Length: 143
Ligand code: HEC
Image 1 (cartoon, rainbow, N blue to C red):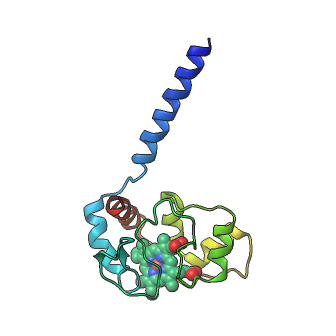
Image 2: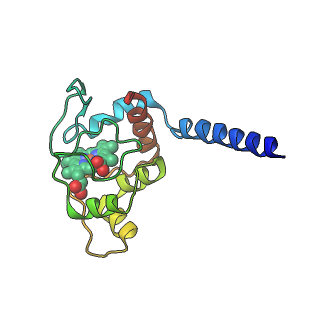
């Protein structure tokens, strides 16, 4: 019985790992093109400084944002609301990323249940498919 229990644990861990990988449902190639909309304000640069996409500095570096705690990139001056969200342990995942892009301020208000919450990101991307593609692209460039 103990053996079966262990087997079940291993199988469910394996299933969990598989679903984490397939968590990008979009098309990374289309997302690379779609990222043009983001690079006015965001770079994608590795920790060693290698730039995958050159971009503006108004927003945080999006390298490694997949699975990162919101508002947690060191050295970037986030707004208070996204920092408060990160303090709840919130980690970026596909579905929330899509909702966030559609309306960042509204997303923070809903998540924090605070009508005064505000996002410093003054950009909206309402096309869900485009957002999914960009997520897939961001996941694909992160090692
Ligand atoms: C006009 C500038 C601007 C554009 C364009 C923009 N962003 Fe942002 N973005 C920001 C700013 C500023 C923040 C920081 C938000 C805050 O502190 O509340 C941010 C934050 C984010 C975050 C949260 C990151 C973290 O570390 O928690 C994500 C994810 C994000 N942007 C994705 C995107 C994507 C994807 C696009 C393109 C579809 C995009 N942004 C376009 C300015 C921009």
